[in-house]
Amino acid sequence: MRSILFTFVLLFAAPFAVAQSTEPQKVIAAQIDAFQDDDFDLAFTFASPTIQSIFLSSEQFGNMVVNGYPMVWRPKAVRYLDTPLTNRPRLLITDQQGRLHLLEYDMVQGADGWRINGVQIVPASGA
Image (tube, rainbow, N blue to C red; front, top):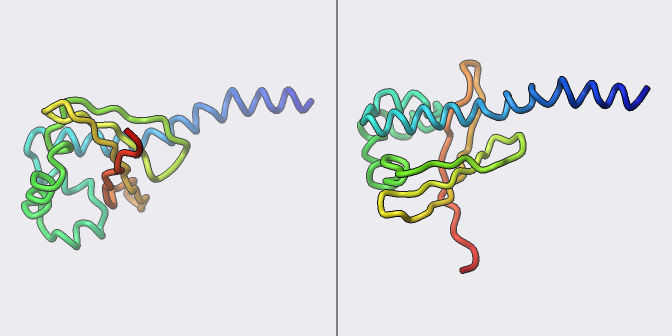
């Protein structure tokens, strides 16, 4: 009986977990797409209320991204790394010069869905 229950959980719970884990990635991807179109108004909508209150306008937010996170503004390639169900997804971004950047996103969930609450560049460890 336990093995049947276990199989049931694996078959039906696993797809739910996968669908749940991709929601933050969809928000991140939508923001990166907006950056590539220089649509800072749209990109700003994916930021958390905290981030929006810090930058006050999409123009100020866009300036911060262009100057502080050019690899996010104009990535050459973006790869979402496997992470457990978490609000801190990691991405490996290749910039226009071919350099790799490991970024960790801080995501918060509100009544209207997931929002980006910050991005941290993870320093390279080792060689």
